[in-house]
Amino acid sequence: MTKQFLGFDVGTQGTKGVVIDSGSGSVVARASRSYGTITGLPPGASEQDPQMWLDAVSAVSQELLSDPAVRTDSVAGVGVSGQQHGLVVLDEEDEVIRAAKLWNDTSCARECDSISAFQGWQMPISYTATKVLWLKEHEPEHWERTRAILLPHDYVNFALTGRMSMEPGDASGTGFFDPVRRAFTDSLIEFIDPGIREMLPPLTPPGEPAGVLDERGAALLGLRPGVLVSAGAGDNMASAIGSGATEPGPVIVSLGTSGTCFEFSDQPVFDPKGWVAAFCDSTGGWLPLVTVMSMTGVTEQMRGLWPDESHESLTAKAASVPPGADGLMLVPYLGGERTPPLPEATGTLRGLTYQNLAPGHLFRAAIEGVTLNLAWGIARMADLGLPMSALRVVGGGARNPLWRQILANVTELPVQRLLEPESAALGAAIQAQWTQRGGGDSVTAIARPYVRLAGGVESPQPAASRMYAQLREEFVDSVLRSHPGGFSESTA
Image 1 (cartoon, rainbow, N blue to C red):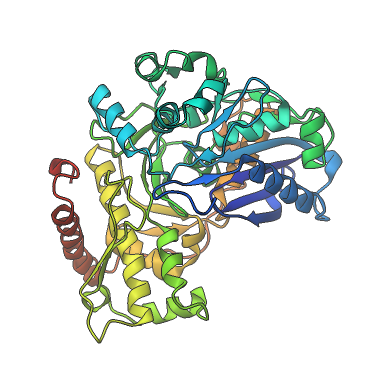
Image 2: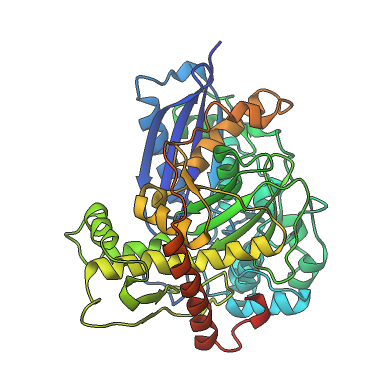
């Protein structure tokens, strides 16, 4: 009998949902809701109310279930993907104590430095551990009430099932987790607070469910109680499932609120400089990954300078500008940066002239700036021996053909777009189907019908690639000169 599965991706800018059909092997419904972060916070802080996630998931589910292609009585499983590294703290009544601190919160820079000095390697500022230490030191009254520490997708799972759990992929981004042993570690927990041991929920192995919908979760989604809820995943791990990175080969680049590059590995990959995260994936393997904070937030900020311009019109103007934007270069650290580790950095725009102070030039410089920075991280992955032969792009930026071509030229790798850009929501739904099948079948085989490539490939253009090779050197040199001592030059 044909079964259908719901997948949700609870992100920073909104929640997206899809329904997949096991009979046709396709996505049969899509829906989304947008939201923002809490305004008026101190510099560097980025927070959201977790209730907003639940409201968005409920609204998206209701819209999905109202689609004629969806048969509510055939829904056999639900999967949840969520933004990584966020901190949700609950009290002894299982109530949220304060707003969730998000992955892109850079107010924890001092705490990050303390943890990095203790460990002897650079922890990314985005990791959950930095926020936990910040909470203990800055809000002791809230820390005193804390009885549970959850990640964003864990909290949504708890709201659906009434059970608290984590899974190895998302747990890898807490800082409290050893991805080689797939277990929580003691040393950092002891350093911050031994009580954390009792606050972290049990781990759910890959392919095992987080639980089933209880009465509250069923009402939230508009489904019947008892429907399976998979372990879920961090958004990058879910995106790996939804883009085919569950076996060696595909290299995935996500052009979203953050920019990421990752690929499947059958063994752990550790970067002592901290640029490449040593994550587990959500299928039993590993997912070495680079994340940059500066991505579509930068291009959207630039687009906002011309409210009457659409993405398409600005892209057309930018496409008429030659590579290098006639000397205009943007170092895009508008809110600090994770890779390279410069949480307190600011952006710079250099090379302004009467000729290039124009919308097309500025928009192109924004796309080039974030791409040059991401390519710096991708080069670090290659330095660690990870194979790079072609890129698959997902996320909102993947829809922009100019951006795909710039990415191909900067990285000197062919770029291909996936037919389903919302790979995290798709991956969450596929994970639910895999779990409902008992987790014993190959997740790659289950995913194969849904993971489809769009037509056409953006191939590197030799002349433009030579230009960008020079610009990459100038970009790195500009960052090093602007932030002397900000991080070890050897990491370049």
